[in-house]
Image 1 (tube, helix red, strand yellow):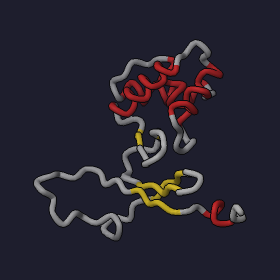
Image 2: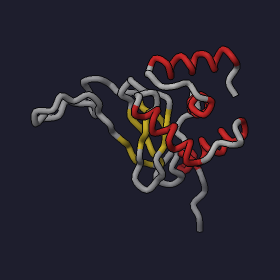
Image 3: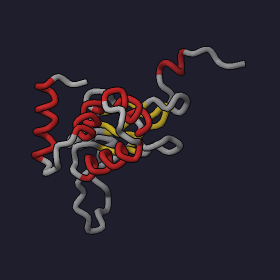
Image 4: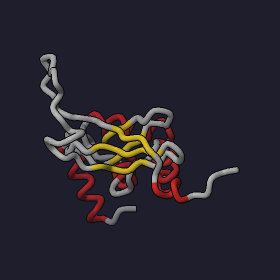
Length: 147
C-alpha cells in the first residue's frame, strides 16, 4: 500500500480531476501506479487485501470514474478482458503477445510509421491514435514448442 506521502499525491490527482477522495479510489490508483496493465479482477484482488469490505462492483465503478476523469486508461485487446493502466496523456501504443497475452507499452514515434496522420481526416480533430501490435513475445518465442 502507498505511503502517506504517496497517498497524498494520489489524493491530489483525484482532487485536480474534480473527483471526491475516497479510500477505494486511492487504493485503485495505487494498485495501477507503475504496475502496467491490469484487469479489474486483479485490481480487485489487490485492493481487498487493504480494504476487505470493497466489492468488485465498487472497483468497476472506481475504474469507470478514473477512466472518465482521464486518470486511468482502459484498453481492450481482442480476446482479452479490458485492461487498465495509470500511464495516460502520452499517446503510447501497445504490443500484445498472441500466446500469453502479455501487454507492453510502445512509445509513439511522432511523424513516423506507424503514427502517421490519417490520409483522410473526415472532419475529425484527432486527439489520440491507438495502435495495437500483435505478435509473439520473446519469452514465448524462447519456450520449447509443445508436442
